[in-house]
Image 1 (cartoon, helix red, strand yellow):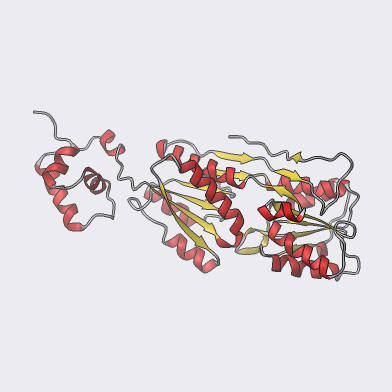
Image 2: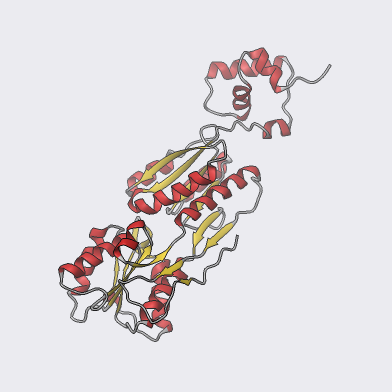
Length: 347
């Protein structure tokens, strides 16, 4: 007699193969009465699933969870579009969870889904906490990071330090020395921790022999309102800056509005450079650093699918290139064209 198969168990128990697979993998998405019945049938038939049989169905839900911050709306939307494009030909659907404040982040991290509910997760622009990493590891679920790095987890990022240095070098090349930074934090919930953009800003100044001024460095949140308030403080200085590098286009919008309200011409009185290259930037003529947001989402989703198929694979760390896009808010040197940052795709 042949050995019983999972199909035999499903037929004898009167349930689908997927239900048997979820019971065998310990999924919580099965009623206790059904779980007990399936195990009784499996024991009666002397069914012993092989490792290959367990690995094939694996109780997959074909659902992936994305956790994104709301305060970087355009960035997050573009990343999600990239993820959706990468998954378009797969059987996977998405569960999107948004975060806007520290309490909500902690709650969402605590409530991260379990095996049987999702097959893996994507974390966008948020530093994972140790408990979150431990949860995914204990659950046997892959977690891929987008726009943030963690040594033991796969990630897709941009070299923000190199990209920021490129933007500031552009301003220095135009003759500016009094260059301000309207920056953001490495972790949006810990504003006192500088991020890679600030490191790039400082590196460019130091390379040019320009002494950084603490009063020119403002760390704010991501909104136009925050950029506006930061610019008001910068313009109130005895020696205000002649150029401003912003860590996001949203902040740059506020900087431009503050300059307009104060009667400052852009770029004649003050040059402005943004970051990300959101859709509205080209219509405003905003010089900015173009971040491959959609490509980051695509590569992140592809990396997650690869990790699902090869769970023992060492974590990949992919770094994509950024591009400086010169428009009218900074002015340009004769014959200057778009430049590529030194960051390279090391996939």
